Image (tube, rainbow, N blue to C red; front, side, top):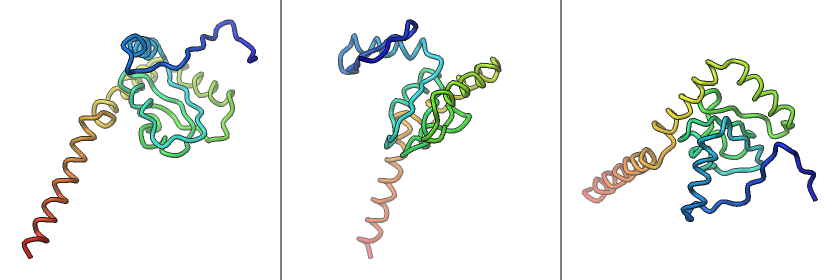
Length: 143
């Protein structure tokens, strides 16, 4: 059985399709200072987009597709996959040591969500790609 820390709260799996779980997740993100995810692999990580929606910067391992949603200094920081708990703690300490920069990072995280990390932006980009494909197909068909 894992050792318990007095100041640690373990939150079990939250199913966003259940209203109470979704509300709890939103409350957690609203109250958070950082999203810490020392993952070993992640293809993209929607969780980074969700954190940015709440202005929560991420600190994560630079593996897989994590560098796509997490932009260094804009909505978080990427650490090497071999980073230790102490490395994560040092990054948090460094960011928190400058309150003004931390507040700007939170605002920048939200801006990243609004301009890049949401479904509306994604659908616009996909629609543009599909429109180009249709135009090229029609041109090819006309020949």
